[in-house]
Image 1: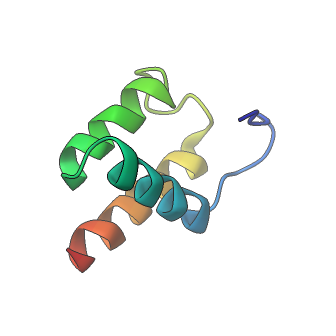
Image 2: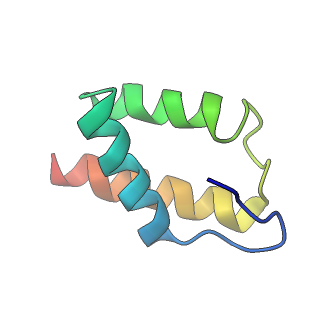
Image 3: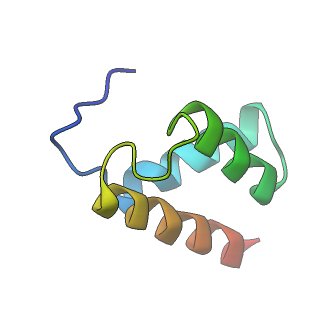
Length: 67
């Protein structure tokens, strides 16, 4: 998937991403978070900007609270 560095990725985007990772790779939310941080953000928290990072954390918290 190609991601444009100039756009802000939404909470909904990351919720869908978490669901995909949870279903296909990591059934534990914390492990899915680590996987996404390593592979999507390339180990750099603000790789796609601060707002995108905040949306990622918000999505993580929403997914974690649902489980």
